[in-house]
Length: 414
Image (cartoon, rainbow, N blue to C red; front, side, top):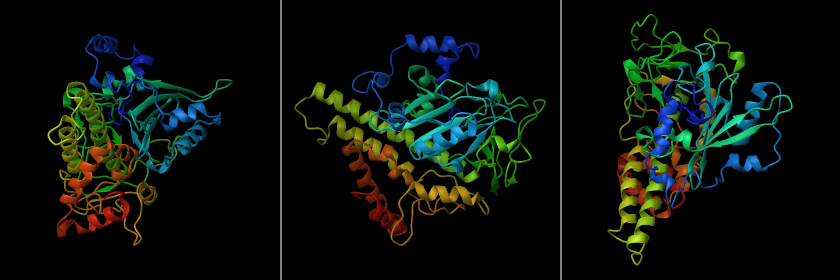
């Protein structure tokens, strides 16, 4: 859905001639050896999804027609996504490139379990978590005239960009930073940055609008003119009223904290999907090669898969590679802070893994709220057990006792 803002690959099928060479790339992929997740036991594209969008498609939900924002707001409500999560990307890094400009950026909205991309005048892109399949991709055509809302699940073509090394080689999501030119095209000769918790802020948000403040300079809110370089700079925009027509969007902001939360979440989401697929594949092979061996037995393929995944997941959950925020850190909107509070449970004393720190590091407690996500909860039991065991070990010292206390009170089985 969004490459550099989580670009949705579905359009490779829907608009195959948009970029010269994309049809050649797609043909090459289709003729190549299938990705492992298209083989048994996963069969990603062949398996029916049971996600929230799939349920919505079966329901009698009637979307409001007419004003595009009304439809978008209603759809977000159905998916449990707040409009205050909005971030805006203006680089032409989606296949709806003809609609994207600095004056007409693409909006992205998200919750721990879903992502929605929308451009004024365009279709809606959805990535939503399914317990078995992980991220599932949809294109939604809003109602127009006598035409009803049309949902289309995008399968193979979507994965051209969203099942690569950028997403741990599974269907997933990612954020990139680029150097855009005055026409919003990414100057690929300048390189791109795959953004994670470890990415310095000076390399982030090229091609994005950023509201809020940061003591660390970044690449947001600007573009290259006449091939001139862009140097990281500080900005302190409360809204984007002077940059774009914000009346076309649900809020006038592209919040800096929302961007950082989104970047972290994408990284975790991919690792959880990778763990889920890896274990199912190991289980499939173990049953085929050594059917008498118990699943999860010491030294078995399934045990090794679970323990390797647990190591990667816990490292990311605990922000072990997080870059330090300089100076006074960052400051975002109160509106998104309130929304973020709904992403995780709150203890009896009012503590939550979504509590923000915003200087030196993003969150107050160094453990990710994504431990409450559908993607985490639907991990194979052996993988989840290995993750929780490793978390208990890593948070066993006095330095981590506050994190441990929150987890013990809010995470089932911790």
